Length: 416
View 1 (cartoon, rainbow, N blue to C red):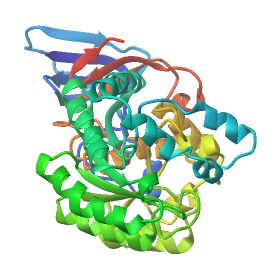
View 2 (cartoon, rainbow, N blue to C red):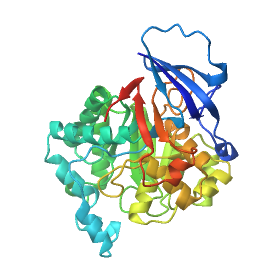
View 3 (cartoon, one colour):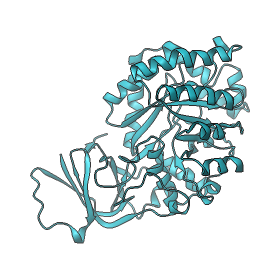
């Protein structure tokens, strides 16, 4: 397919010399071209520029043209942290929190992660695939073009492998670019309640070898948190995972400061995610690393935890990524437009910083910034076209409205 988008009011996040991430004061800059055109062939971006410089002769047969007068074109969002494969919603826990119970109290009553584990173990791969595909299609129409999906609602050899096989199948069924993360260390299952080290041994000695043999995951994650896994256990698990070819990630400093950031830096994690309880020592550790700090505004908003120090991280010179944490318990939304709005409204990030965080930097958190996250020649043609809006700042400003008109994935126009 050959596609030309012309008369673009503003072509957003343009790169002639592509970067793998953006940090510090550079995050305040969002390269754009006004009154632009963009050319796509097959599944790649092949050229772009200003309308006044548009080639006089276009020798493409079968060229499809979209007139984007008054509209903006963005690279698709990259959502580097999701739990989009799950068996059932958990709205009762939402009501429980309204009535005063904390996340930890709900977990102690058998809710939280273990609630999702119980439900997931009871359903088939086919049911999981069907429900996850609906969610993937939903977030795609909201502008997401690449997404990471975690296991972690299985917590047994059989159920974790089932989840990862579902994610592997989704890669073939969905046009989205999907990365798979093994999160067997999401919680300690009920049957190992007083035998945590035995469960860690199960992860290392049984789960990881089978995952590696079937090539079911790109990353390995651990929930480093009081009552879940310690920093030392996180390092133990992720060091073993690296031996099986999986790149580390960490759920870090979500409900308390538990050493997850420092553990992640020590093992060379590609990202550390959440960061509501990040401190100055963690910022110093991140500054000496290649690890991407990633904030999850949906989870913070839903659980009403403290704001992560996003402004402080950027002002200290760090890069920052945004992801949705789409999951049934603490962030039941994968709408990245809303995540970008929350980052601006609650964390005082500028629209430029938030868009950089949700595109090029979140692509980095998935190892995809060479192919996704910006408008550049040779990159994947995953983009969206807005409705007629005034500027890119309108998108986070208009937080409850759908400003997206057309979604293009792999060079193909997607119909809702």
